[in-house]
Image 1 (cartoon, rainbow, N blue to C red):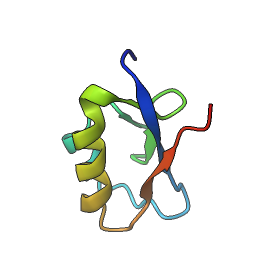
Image 2 (cartoon, rainbow, N blue to C red; image 1 turned 90 degrees about the vertical axis):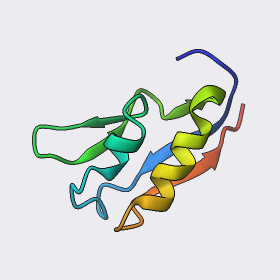
Image 3 (cartoon, rainbow, N blue to C red; image 1 turned 60 degrees about the horizontal axis):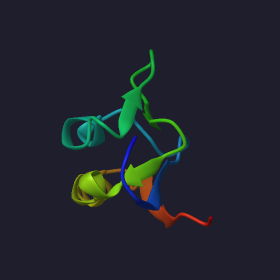
Image 4 (tube, rainbow, N blue to C red; image 1 turned 180 degrees about the vertical axis):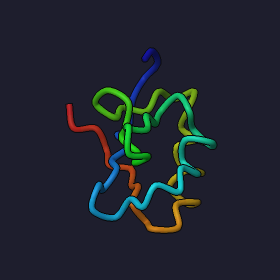
Length: 73
């Protein structure tokens, strides 16, 4: 993914229940496994162009399974 990355999207697999709202909101940032659970694409870095979608996905997760963490480079 291109663009400056200030945040990393993290999915807590223990909390994810497979609602997949995050995939609908931020398809560039979320992969869904064969069981229907979400995983961040790659290392989870969020390109600046997708920062708003990442924030919206975090806010819309009914299980609070998503969070944004600062990238520590």
